[in-house]
Image (cartoon, rainbow, N blue to C red; front, side, top):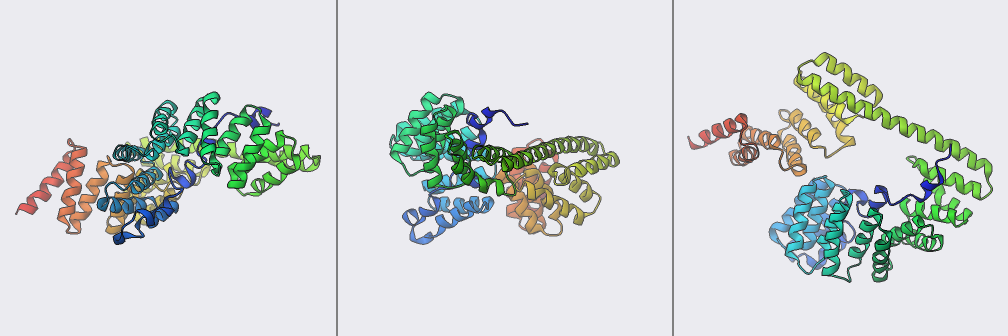
Length: 440
């Protein structure tokens, strides 16, 4: 069956909201690679662009370290602060992202940049009212800053207030007519309002300025509604040819072929759409069931009922071979039974699908602790980058540093663990023993 025609004109979605604002997993990327020469001093002329390159390549832990190094020397470097926030965002550490952005906004009272990024963060978290507050502050600080108007329009659009969104997006385009994202969002708004003429103009502009999957999809939809059937086919064909094609794009292309009078091709794509939609739904169902089985297996493992836990994990992985929670739990069980090699294989596989999951990083650190202490430390350090309140990771870091003979760092890590979990007897005992050894 064809999906309802309304799907071609759906309200703004998370997928749309993430366009440009979370490209490649980043809050802020555009412009970061170009600012190094203007702000860096002779001591580290390449540090900002190098940090931005790490960010662009999704090497988030390394990017955090690079930006922190810059900020130790230049504590009020706004570009480094924004880059650090973006790196934390890539690690899903939204608390640190917000902290860094709030500090940057306070330190640079005439700049709207950090407030805009705070607005983007709240939009990403679906906190639209909070986003509007931050973005209004950004506009008040600098009425000429186009991204502030754009994101304020996006926040209003996400709330369903198109009347307030439209003038903000229009002002963003007036201030910066060459920015694809502003045309994209305004074109989406016009399309939702069935204003095909204006939607078509903005969709064409967005696609011309930055041809990518989102702008192609928008132009393909709008061209179809404007009866530009051949153009819709031409624009959507590359999306349909992609291996990870979105089933909805197949549906749109089938309609475009039908509009262009190619009934046979339209029917073929309709069948492919139905096939892929069903496969996608089946995969989601299998993953949900596998996640549920992994949760049950975890409860059984905590009760030391390993045989039934392993049976549930086998069933989960039969349904979803890449299921991260199942692989991580299996790694814990295998490691506890002395099979570190198998545990390493399993946790590495889990991390491929979710590379900054703190639980997975912690498990890998435990698995590596005896065979490769340096690599284990790196894992635990990444855990606390993602979640600075993870006291277990600080405790393990302290233990590893102590075995390596670095008592200063061991003490720092253990004190941090005790500060985060002051009632944990193991942390207190380890710190007391280390302190006793240091005073003797």
